[in-house]
Amino acid sequence: MDGISISIEIAAFIIGAAVSYFVWNKALAKKAQNVIDDATADAEVVRKDKILQAKEKFLQLKSEHEKHINDRNSKVQSAEAKIKNREQNLNQKVEDLQRKRKQTEQLQKDLEAKLKRADSKQKELDKLQNQHIEQLETISGLSAEDAKKQLINTLKDEAKHDAMSLINDIIDDAKLTASKEAKKVVIETIQRIGTEASVENSVTVFHIDSDEMKGRIIGREGRNIRALEAATGIEIIVDDTPEAIILSGFDPVRREVARLSLHQLVTDGRIHPARIEEVVNKTRKQIDEEIIETGKRTAVDLGIHGMHSEIIKLVGRMKYRSSYGQNLLQHSRETANLCAIMASELGLNPKVAKRAGLLHDIGKVAEDGEELPHAILGMKLAEKFKEKPDVCNAIGSHHDEVEMTSLYAPLTQVCDAISGARPGARREIAESYIQRLKDLEALALDYPGVLKTYAIQAGRELRVIVGSEKISDQESETLSFDIAKKIQDEMTYPGQVKVTVIRETRAVNYAK
Image (spheres, rainbow, N blue to C red):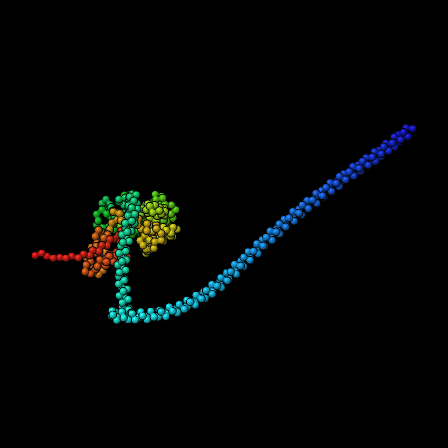
């Protein structure tokens, strides 16, 4: 009985579960149908929105397309209008050209007719001119060619005299302004430079305390003096000069090595060939070091940088070289300072000018034996060691051996002359000075009409006496110009030479 009741309960549970599942499944189906219906409705709404958007986009594109077509049509119409206007203008120009061509053809015909008439009139004029010339030749007794030559010579003389007067006027006007300004710059430059009144010269005479030392220097059978000459390359002359030995040699550095070596040997008292060779080698090294140190110190003192080591060595060698009694290094330093100050006054680069002034005479201390003027040799050395073109040209042209290409060249030349021409800077041999005055006077005597010449003011002025009956006043102006130009071309002189031509007429009578 219990088993039956359990089976009935199970069956009832199963039936209830089946009924619940059926009810749930039906509800789920209804719910799914509702979701499908909702989705269908939403899709229909979206489809309608998309259709509306597509229509709007279509209408927009259609409007833009119509606008683009309208713009294009308007541009086409505008281009057609321009083409029509251009065509009308071209037609108008063609008509104008045709009309002008007809006018030109007519003018050409008229011109040809006028040329024919002009040719006929020219022939008549030539005929009349020939007749007139024949009549003039008959009256004057001169041919046309002779009269032309006389006229040309007369005009040439008048033009030459007028040109000389004009040149003198121009020179006088320039002197009133340029000379004043130039003197101002030069004087201010010189005033700003502190120069030494005395300078060192290369020593060629070695003084000793007594003549007994000469025998020790010569040595037994001359061994000491031969060893000293072989080691230094300097000829040592021991003669009757009291308490002095002469050192003879072209190289100033070698001469200084010999002097210092002799001084050390004499001071030490040990003089024999081995000791001589040791002292000379040691002295030579000291001199080489001193040369380099002097070059470096000079460059630093002047504010010049970036020079090649060989250039610095050449600058140091200037200390042992003199020119006309003036120490070359002191002269170069002075020229460099003058160049820098004058360049500042003239608006140029003072560093370039100072460099050119310092190096302008390095050709005098070159170690190679090229037979060239020192200015050309110095320019080649500067080019070899990569100096600037303006500096190289200033070095090579400061004695006019090469053409000047920049303002630094005449500046260096002027400052070199200022340094060498100041009082006490250089000495001049009396014979060469007298010879220069004689050459100056003889040069002017070669001109016809010159009676006497006098070189005065140490050769800075030449006075020329001419005969009043042989040379006129205008010819005297020409003569002074010609003499000055000849002096400038043929002679070498410091500063400038003034040429004064004197022409006078004297009337002499005696009262008895």
